[in-house]
Length: 143
Ligand SMILES: [Cu+2]
Image 1 (cartoon, rainbow, N blue to C red):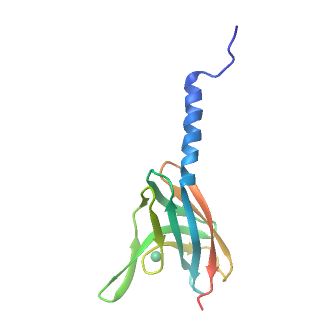
Image 2 (tube, rainbow, N blue to C red):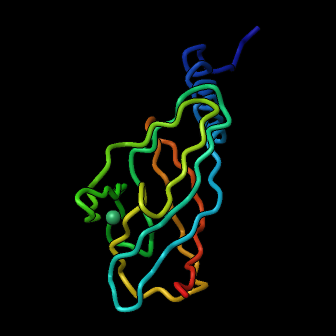
Image 3 (cartoon, rainbow, N blue to C red):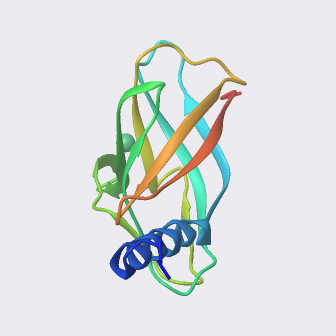
């Protein structure tokens, strides 16, 4: 009798793949929006991250087809002046909710074209381990 099955090592590799792909679903993204200022070639994106799993999730970067560059930034205020700088990877513990909101953490987009209120901006959040989570942010009117 012959066994045409793949060797056990390949089975384990496939199983490992399935498990690795299942994990990112633990991270959900809500309330994604972009604040765009007419005539300005950078815009900030805000969203709420919820890690519904038990393992930490780390967002190491962001990509968007509407931006030539996307970075995680943090706004800080000192001596009454607001400034912002790149922020390291975002670590969201199991069960934790992390809000990126005006005055704090945001995703800085270097736009490759103008945005108008109502536009949809796809964002791809890159996670440590190679997975990613896609979300669509809507551009809000400033007024
Ligand atoms: Cu910024």
